[in-house]
Image (cartoon, rainbow, N blue to C red; front, top):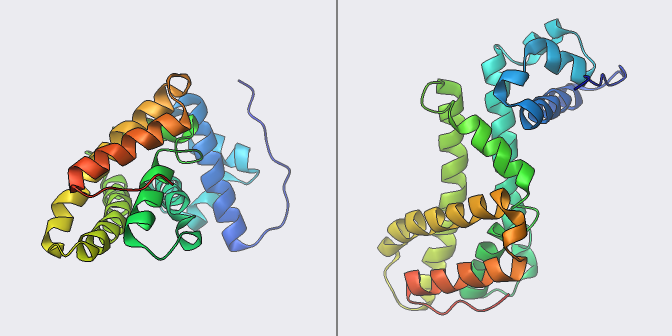
Length: 209
């Protein structure tokens, strides 16, 4: 595949940093982590290789930062509708669960990027730190929503942590399947499965949203 060099334009610090991250994600999506060389990233972002060092100490730090942006964006996409939902704990939890197994969260590219990067986690400290941070950000948000639903039902909040760990694993499994085999599921089907599974896990009836 021919590398496409973006035209050089003057840009602010955050714009340049974002361009480097976008270029890194594009290259990993196209050819795996090995395709994201310093030279290829610079060419794709329309900058000199030396400029990358201004923003990231190592290429590994850049790859880890790109992974962080990807995963944080998915968490925010799952939570995007929460402010639009009624101020009811069960409805808000149901909304978050449903969004977590629906587009754009289940974008096949996002799942492929996640899979391409995961083998770096055990041996790259920067990637491990980013993975831990983004995993906990999603799980902690889920735990707070579960705790609120439990409180409404008069149940102790100390159940929420274990339920969030199990619920996060459930959502991860559906997310991977939806992204890897998108033609095998409909959005409504996955939402229904996720909501039903959560209802059984929590022994609370989550509404359809």
